[in-house]
Image (cartoon, rainbow, N blue to C red; front, side):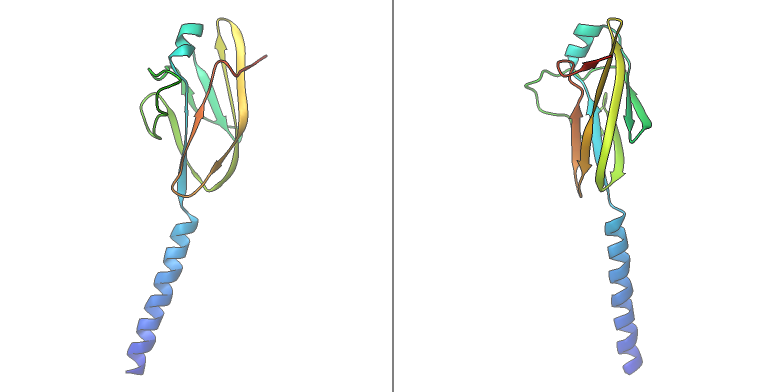
Length: 128
């Protein structure tokens, strides 16, 4: 009987450890996007997006939304969505608009069960 109790206790402890490890490995998401104003202002464009100095994708088409429309969900078409562990990150994006070099930069945080949305707004750009 004692061996059964010890076995059950061991199973409970192992189950708790496995659940804690899964929680530490949790990934949240971040999505980058722009809207149709980018196409109106720039024509064809490519916006290169970097997270912590690593290129994560290229936005080549805007979402067909206005600024008053709801934000996209992580994973929506015409966005760049990546999974990251919880923490603080920096991003940098660069592109060309009507032969002018453009860039965006900032920081974001990933939290558990989160979808962080970053709108690359052509009205808030830093020209180079």
